[in-house]
Length: 368
Ligand SMILES: *Cc1c(COP(=O)(O)O)cnc(C)c1O
Image 1: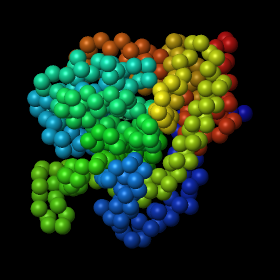
Image 2 (image 1 turned 60 degrees about the horizontal axis):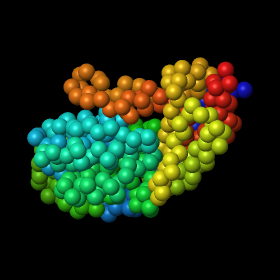
Image 3 (image 1 turned 45 degrees about the vertical axis):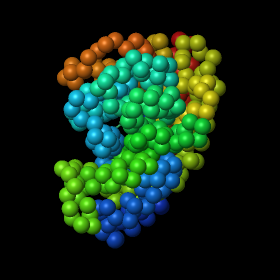
Image 4 (image 1 turned 180 degrees about the vertical axis):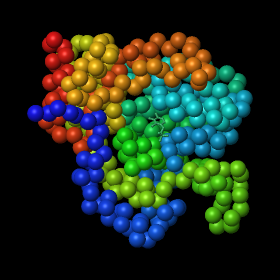
């Protein structure tokens, strides 16, 4: 009898790769290599290769990746940056915290920024676009890059939810000036604490980020090149992430298999909008399996009552939080999504019996 299905289960995943994680821990501890050492360099090299960029720079978090990218691009006071109205708040906060003004644009049915609304939101102050590749499928980068080039705008990809995703083989985080990744434990490549990375092909930006994550210091000479931050990815976290990165292609396959199981079992339920889109060339890696039910909380609460951990991000859109002082211009798709979203358990440590149980409970809800 199943009485609980976890949304993610870090301890169970640890059990699956315990030997290698323990060996990484032992290696780091016995060498005493804690800050900016070999494990970090190795992970950065492997991550850049995986994403398809020349460089990767490990930082403290996805937020730091976004923040440093904006700074590196010279975005600040007086500038506007376009960002989707449906995303995790950190995308927007990074823009606000460099002193720039976020300009929110609604999303479409795939939860990503509505590119047809981009041009009408570009003013003479617009300096950049921050598309967010939400849940594991990329925003329409072809169109975004076209518009960005036309208006000479910088593109910073918030790829925090889409490591391993691609459009016609081009990886998330390899198309804009930078790609920003998060290794928060719930992410597809999760560390054992906070972590993040920037990917880029731009050598200057790479060198800037290397210094700024280390208080502005150029390590060889000791010269400070600017007022920086303390936001390096820990060498220990990098060692763990390097182990997990090797498994990512295999894990993505498993996620797609789970998504297909959900799809096959639930696609006949008219009330449910499942996250399967007919978008040629777009590869969905299912960071999240976020469906929509018109029954909103009634649906998600039923799953919770039956022992299934689900996420309902975000019932309250970030721009409606008063203290963030953002203008609610009315974003109809974001509002509808916010009422209806429910992310089902999606992880590589889950068993088929548990998936079957989730499916059964969803069906029970509609057979009530
Ligand atoms: C997780 C996430 C972030 C922030 O990452 P942290 O590592 O938690 O700072 C930013 N944007 C999106 C879309 C995310 O999902």
